[in-house]
Length: 131
Length: 405
Image (cartoon, chains in turn green, orange):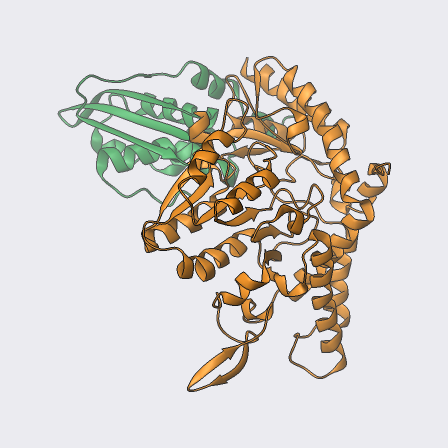
């Protein structure tokens, strides 16, 4: 019987963890920002190239658990080619929805670390309450 | 005298939570509590719930007697000279903060040296950092060698600089390393230092004798030794405690209060302001009784046995790294990592099998930095732990490896 827990490490999340999309660094990025979760040691950083208000290219780097890294990989797929105005609207429900799994309170910070990089780094907005 | 052995099956019957089917491998974090402890607390709530040291009626006297009885139990348990040297605190953290504040601000002067170790818990680092910053003192940390054991050569060098205070944990919570505490205390005293030993991980797991140890202060928590949260102990040598000013001020820690000034209560109450954690202290007393019944030598022998078993079982798992010394020189704590799997993912997968495994930096970030890793997974054992739970952990790890392959 499949439960929400059994789906925690769904195939596509593991795939994004093992084969992260848009992984690496950009040379001379327009924006570069990194955040970490000291509690578990997760690190996610993102480099953005922006042209005419559109995220032309993006790379992420980091290390940590499957949830933090898969979440970052999924977010870069969504951000690439997206207008900044649209990217600004991405919220935590979008990110959690994209992961499509039940995240326990203890792991929410892992799942939302990449969103924090996007918000704090690219837009200078204070990170929303992640709880 | 032959060491008694623990009847683990009988012990487990005293811990209702184990009936839920969990494999609880996080006792270094907090232990479970037997019926005897919760029962003693319930008895207080239901039969003589009242405040201590204040009232003249019968149940308040009963509460006071039970509350103070824990002090003698603890004194005997750690072989302190007098109950005046046994101060109730909320736990190890408060005990260390008490010393940092009440002893430290009076005795640490600009330029003084404080020696800590890289194995210390944040609760035995941060209070001293705050003290050092306010007093203009400096801190040096004893490093570890490749086996995760303190570099005593470096410790000896630091002692030559005449530190005012030396503080270290007897057992590392993150790696389980048992430090050669007697040797270290003797050397530090020889060098003229005041010595605080953080006994949070040692008191629950092996016999403790503070007078044989020779330290000036010794701190520990009740909740890691079968007692409830909220009750812990600071042991301090009487002459040091007497020379110290109070930490917290308020009711119950005074003799007389006049507008012109206040005289403080005698030891140990001078350091116990306000209404205390009465039920928790009574629970701690019941925990000490329970451990005495088992015998601390037997507790240590049981943990050594299961730790040896776990060390071997984990070492056989491919791609798994165990941190720290061999079982004979460690407590029932095993920190490890598995190639390609973050400790948090490992803990989440173990949790699906009802295996309670700790993952993180274990409040020892300087140690994690020293090891060059962000976090580890950690299994830790206690009187109710059994080898079958180690087997469940190993199969959870293998399941995680299958998922992440």
